[in-house]
Length: 101
Image (cartoon, rainbow, N blue to C red):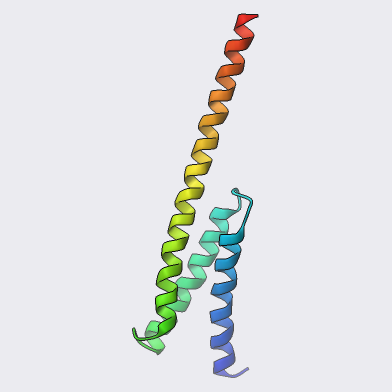
């Protein structure tokens, strides 16, 4: 495998992991997918900075991806927090109804 193939595979890896995170429908798996995508994107960014410099167009994509992953992670955490509150609220409603009987 030559160097350009390795670079292409590195670029494809972070893109694949990013898509997996964004398209994940199981909210329990989203944090893991985000972490995997962040790691691959960070490694790719460091490689590009060392090898190509800051003018590499792919770096702009990686910055954008980082922002999207931050927002996705924030929304996932918010949804999980809301579900926990809803679950507690549902339990309180059931307890109140049981006491009425």
